[in-house]
Image: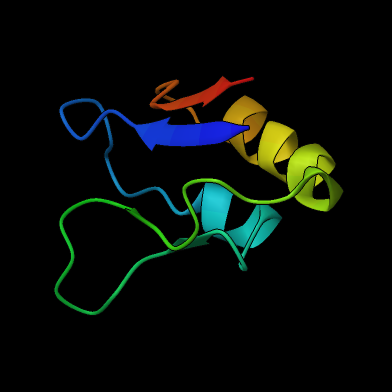
Length: 64
């Protein structure tokens, strides 16, 4: 699985960080969400899928 965040869409709501804190992060000065692990293992699929679903602007894409 590969995760990408469309930085043009991201509004830094932070719902993805709540859903999958091991995968997403927002630093103090960040204007968009950071992907900490762009290719996480299958054990993270459920939380990453939840994070993508929770994103109010649909900025997260999961491939594979």
